[in-house]
Image (cartoon, rainbow over the protein chains, first blue to last red):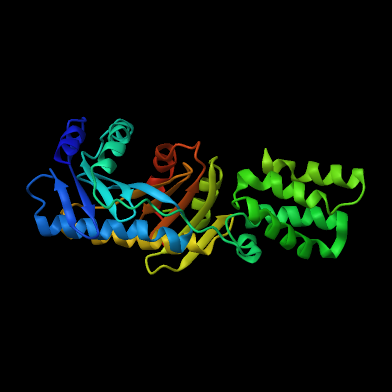
Length: 205
Length: 112
């Protein structure tokens, strides 16, 4: 593990790095000596909490950076309970460091014991949750466009269609096209269908 | 000095910002724009506090901003001001550095 950290430290701007696991604490480090063992463990523990938050907020954050006056902190999630922590100069070239880390990540993971894969974030299965989630604004537009064609049942129809959509797709903007296609089956008449597609087209292009 | 409304106008004039949330230091949401998601405000408030908790162990001053990258490539940028915390949900094709350069100087000018 130390060899990998040595390679990372060779990248311009990197002051040192460490690998923290929830179960074992710091398993490798070449951070400057000013960071004592206890402090490194505490830093790792606090940073790991941010990844644990993913499930609660339905995000899939797998790396982050924090800018301080004296340094830039880069953190990359390795396994479900471990992270690589890199301390760099404040104006370090992040892209260069990320490139080095990307090349080493697979090898690092292979040499780590009990490295559990990062669990995928649970996607919402309830149409209500989707309607009030990040796509709320887009779905409100879809509902309005649908209501113009099928009237007051648009809300119920949209919920039913979202339920159907969630069986095969993740509720993401890039998949809205499939939801539109499901909804087209609920609209009568080619003209109405065409109007609905035109109105919702701006969401999917 | 800038008002929250002026900040919102500047931020929403930039391309690639899907959501904007401004929270007070106690986590109260003061303003949001774009797609609503109550959790973004809570999230940025939590991670900002987390970054500040690290200071005694690191011995650094700040923090000034945080960039969280998701597997999809989308990013959440958090700007930390004296009185407020700003959360920005960015498209994957937008450079966080450009957004930070434009908005960070305004953050400390905002008074609530």
